[in-house]
Image 1 (tube, rainbow, N blue to C red):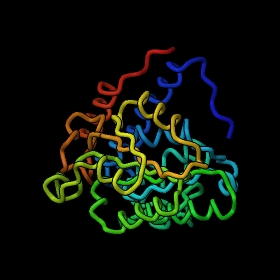
Image 2 (image 1 turned 90 degrees about the vertical axis):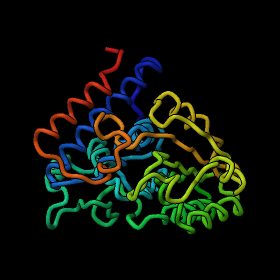
Image 3 (image 1 turned 45 degrees about the horizontal axis):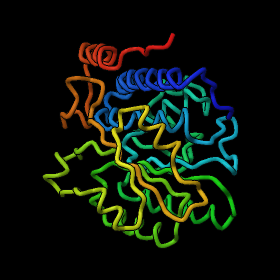
Image 4 (image 1 turned 180 degrees about the vertical axis):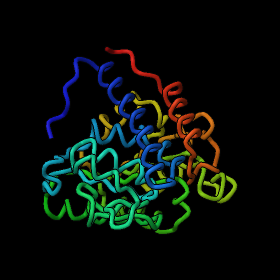
Length: 289
C-alpha cells in the first residue's frame, strides 16, 4: 500500500488524531448494532492502533497475504470492535459488511477470526497467547530470511498470564529484533485496577530484566507514538523491543474514562449520543485545514 503523503508533520498528526476520533465514534455505532461492546479497552488502544495502521505497518489491503507485509496480532482480542473498523476503512473488505457486526452468521464477533476477516493475522480472545504467537511468527520470518516485523498489542491485565513471560524470555533468547510488543497500559482489567489485583510495576524494569529494549510513553500522544515507532531499531537487530503505552481506559468519552463499568457495556440511544458528543469535545478536530 502506498503511504498517504502529507505536506508536513502537523498535517500527519492532524490526520491521525482525526482518524482516532472518528473511529471512536464508529465503535459507538457498532456497539449499537451489536447491542453491546468492549468500549473501555477499545478507546484506550485506539491511538496506538491508528498510529500503527495508518503510519507504521507495511501492508497492502488489496493483497492481505503479501509475503513481505508486517504482521499485527491483537492479543487483547476483546478489542475487536475497535480494530475491525480500521480494516474496513483501509479497504481490506467493504465497509457495508460491518452492518452485520456480531449478528448470526456474520464474520464479525466480539473477537477477531482470521478465517473470516481479511487482514486479521490471528484469531485471538483467550488472553496471554498473542506474544507467544508473535514469537513464532518472528522465528518464521528469520528462517525464511524475510525482513518484515511482528507487532503484538497486549492489554496490561493479560500480563498476569505466565505464558507472556515465557514468550518474553524466548524472544530475548532467540534475539528477535523483528519483534515489537506494545502494552496498552490503562491500569484496569475486567475485575478492577491492575495494581490491586496483581501489581505490575515496576513494569519497565521487569521487561528490561528479560532482555527487552523498552520505551515508556504516553499512549494518547500521537507525536510520541509515531516518534517512538519511527525510531525503532531495525528489524535485523538482535534485541526485541517493547513500547509501554500509558493510556486511559475509556479515553475520549469523559464519563467512561477510568470507569471500569465500561469495560463492556450497552448504551441506550441518549447515552450513545452523549458519548459521541463527548468524543467531539474531548478529541476536537485538528489544526491543519
